[in-house]
Length: 165
Image (spheres, rainbow, N blue to C red):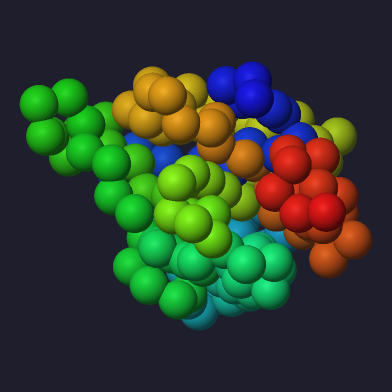
């Protein structure tokens, strides 16, 4: 697998940027499926209700296909990848982490903000994906799923990444 595939790589961002993750003044023209709602509930590092529902849907699809959720997806706490020398700065959280049925392969999926085209991850999301990939050498690249994706789009992305038939 390539280290990052634009339409299928998913990233949670650096702890220091999480406050900006759901900011209503995102100047990058992101399609965040409501993450910029003003005064909306359930915002923060885990995202708004739509983001949480999307993360759960991704996890549900993968569990239905024999994967075990080991982090995130509303099943468990998100996987935490510390920054350099264990620091919080430069750290990442992964939205959904799963293992293959036999436990031999770990896959990481993030739901991401995109530019107006609906598929290209924002610079912040791409940077976070690269950071996660660098912290997990020898493992498959993180899969990014654009926020606002339909069930059919999620399945297409996961199928394209070879996770489901």
